[in-house]
Amino acid sequence: MKILIVDCLAVGEGRRRFSRDFIGGGPKLIAGVLNQLSLRNLNVKIYRAERILTNKKEKANIINAYDLCLISAMTMDIKSVQKVIKIWRDFNNDKLVIVGGPISSDPDLIKKIDADIVCQGEGEKKIYSIINILQDNQEKINKRLEIVEGIVYRYLGKYFKTKPSNILSFEDLNKYSNPNYFIKNIIDYKQYKAARIYIECLRGCSNFYRMKFPLNTNKICVESCNNCREGDLTNRIE
Image (tube, rainbow, N blue to C red; front, top):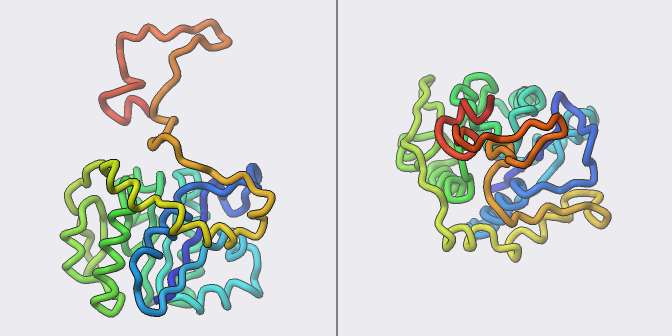
């Protein structure tokens, strides 16, 4: 199985304007998970989204070479994700697209981007299970996906959502995030020798965990509502 991982992180509408030397955590972690599967003829490759979105000559060769497309993105990257998926469909309409990362916090995402599977929350354990299921069923969507927690998938024209997944245990996190499995995929990034490579020390998004120190406007947190630390996610986003 040949698997393409498209890094859409911070690409926005199609071109990364800032932090171009930055290699994030998600795509390489997922590559490491896939490398642990020990599938016959497994080939995992990471491409930045720009190589598909801006290189007309190269994109056809890239897309046609793979059996499955995985996309990692943030909420700000929805337009670039839509563009990548459209290009993938133009060349590989019958081959699956799986999307994960912070972008999956949108419960209706799968309908907005024309994906086949969306992984909500931590993706390592989900991807491990999903690929095993797809590999056993000629890489097609099937009802066995209902056993995978924390995903939304499209099957026979309908959308199905499984029950939420639990947070990964330290044992599972250490298992799936072992650098020995993904280090070879870092060289998929052309600028890896000069890049700032993200090393995950704390899991979670700081966007939903607000600061409490005084701002330059002299505003100070009253520390009584606790919306920045717990409770409804909608309140924390606002």
